[in-house]
Amino acid sequence: MRMNFNQYIQNPMGVANSVISNREMYRVLYTNKLNQIMVREAGRMANIKNHLYKDGKRYIAYIKIPSEKISDFYYDILIEFTEPDPNDPNVKKKVTGYGLEDYYVRFYANDPSFFYTFVHAFIKNDMFFKDMKHKMPKRNMKEVAKEKNPQDVVGYVKSLYFAYLLMIRQGLFNKLKYTETFNQEVIDRLVLSAEIMVEKRQEAAESNAKVKREKKARAKQGRQDHLEKELPGNIKMTKVVSNVKNTISNKASKFVKTTKRK
Image 1 (tube, rainbow, N blue to C red):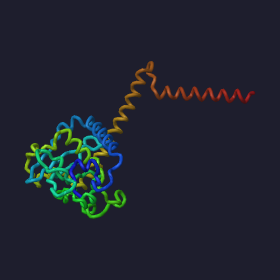
Image 2 (image 1 turned 90 degrees about the vertical axis):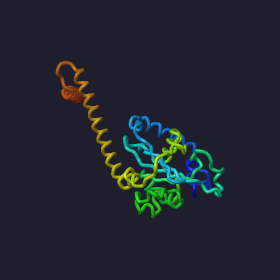
Image 3 (image 1 turned 60 degrees about the vertical axis):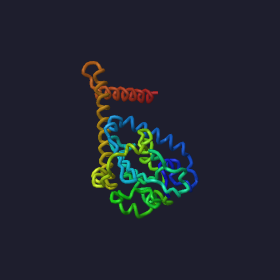
């Protein structure tokens, strides 16, 4: 099953399958998610360079896609564009001009969703970028993801959807922008394997969690310092709290004594 990027976004299971439900819901959902991420990553994304390669008759886009949950953490996405088969009934027209919208696509992503859930299905449907197979766990390529994707179907991968939206916004479907020469050795140095990406993601998640805990602790301490400054004299918060507790305790004791005398 071959398809172009637009067809993947319209229905990742292919035109031969029933049209995917809630297509508009996914479009709105992923567009809003990407917008929020881009606000968070604004300064960092501005410094990230896309690589657009021309290799014979094929075009290859290498795009860094930010994680939705972890700030300053990016996945490697590669998209191979090749001319479609003119005898393919799903190709609506002869490919002409400078656009890549009607070109067949194959993907590589070290996004965990891609290789834990979908990589076998992408390989089965000839939608996996074979140049990068050495960067993917062999077991995931050979075995169906029985728990996550028992039907072994091609589905939406969030990082690929984000890549599509960014390509639209940045005009990356234009062949004229693909001027770099594809070099496998260079790509191998730039792109992390799926296993290493998982390790780095775990490290980044732990680092982010630590930063959040420290920020929360500083904010709490700041609030306490502010309250202490607002109190008269040298009274401390601990003393105030203690006095309040003693007052409540004394009142409760008096109430009990009075009740007993009655």
